[in-house]
Structures are given as structure tokens and as C-alpha cells.
Image (cartoon, rainbow, N blue to C red; front, side):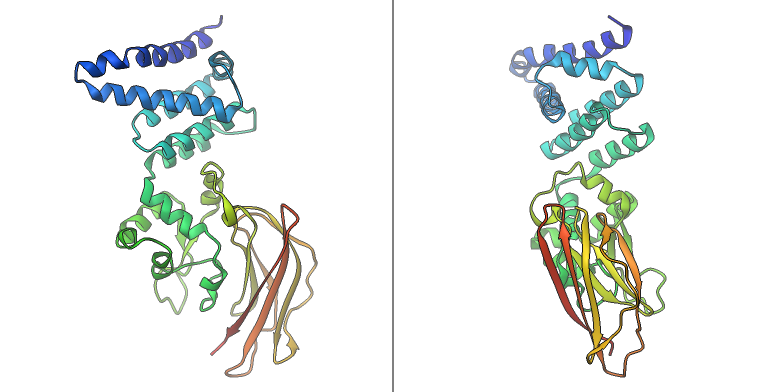
Length: 303
């Protein structure tokens, strides 16, 4: 057996031995170690499950196949043992499982993903998920397609979470998960938070369910373009786009279908010179990854 395999086998042996002695340790009153043991075993079980492996030996062999995989596993295990939230351990395990699956990956990217997973708590994930949940009606009064103000986000959260928003949003921004999409605009009226491409990458490991998984599109008229953004976490294909004002077509030449992955935005040529007080009727139709067809419509006033 190669040396790297022996090192990885030692990690598994340590977890197993600690688990077997957990009861006696607890009986001595050193409950801290019992907690660490339970977390380590929980993480190991999740790695096996998400890897689709039934035995310790199969996972050990995968971990042992490269030094980089051992580095990832050891780092994730250390962070999982230090977390009291099972969701954190699950995300860490999913990241490790992806590494073990044979998909192309880079150590620097995985290291950052592990760091992010370890630092997010329940409230952080709740805010991130709320921001990622497609709510087309949220964008009626803004041309920042897919962006949300602090008040928008708070409206979808329990009151006790809403009062914690400023520090949570600050931390998510520091982690590179959200960005103020309105920053630098001439009529800046406060932050309009958007998920970053890194956030959409990270969401792959959060295992979201429901509407958040599917492609969901929103459309808005900007100062010189028509903006279309996929708000969901799944890819979708735009099959129809319309923009009219008092019966007059505004949209320039567009090639359809238009494929947009999670979080992607495109800008389309559009006549935005509307009469004073006029508005535009906008609609977008798309097909998501499951083949389901949906339509979103809105009326956008230009003041």
C-alpha cells in the first residue's frame, strides 16, 4: 500500500477509534471531545453518501490517489469538526465529493469554497438564499435587474433575521458572494445587492430546492438597452422577448433562442427614447432545463 494511502487510512482509523471511545470519554465529563467525534463521523458519512460510495475503503482509495485530494479532505475534515451546524458539514462534504468524483477542479478554487462554507452560519445562508430566490415582482421599480435593496431582502425574512441584515450583508460582500450593483451610478440611492458569479458557483454545493433551482428570467429597460437576466440557479433558453410603448416596438434585431446560465445577464439593442410620462410593456418567455415553459411580464414606467 502506498504511503499516501496509509496516511488517508490513518484519518479513517482515527475517526473510527474516536467514535468507539466516545461513550467512555463522555462518561469522564469531557463532552467537548464527544461532540468533535460526532461531527467527524457525520462528515465522513456525508462524504461517502455524496460520493456514491458504500465503504470506507472506496473513499480512502480516492482520497489517496493524489496529494491534493488529501489536502482537500484534511482541510474539510478539520473545518467540519469545528462546525456545530450540520448544513455546514453537508456543504463541506459535497465539495469533497465533487473533488473525488474526478471532475476537473483546481486546488485554489476548492480551498476558497471550503473557507466560504466554513464561515457561513444559518442567518448568512438564509439571507443568501432569500437574495437568490427569484421574485420578479421585486424588480418592478428598478432597472437593476435581479438586484434587491435591504428592505426587499428583509421583507422575505423573519423579523429577528431582518434586524441582523447590515452585518450579514457586509460579511457576504467580504466573502465575494454579493456585490452592490448600483455602486457608481449617477443617481445612487443606496445598495442594490446582486449575487456574484462566485455565489452561483457556491450554490451548487448548497443543494437548493424548489423554484430557486430553475431558470427564472426578469427583463428591464435601462438607459440605452434592454436587460435580460436569469435570476435562477438553472440554465434556460429565451424563446421570445417583446418591448413596446403605446403599441410601438422598441426592440432591435435579436437572435433567438438565447441561452443564459445561472446569474447571467445580456443587453439587447432597444429604443429607449420614450415620450415623457410614457412607459414600456416588457415580456420574456423561456424554457428551463426540465422543458417547462414560462413567461414574465411587466410594465415599466419611465417617469
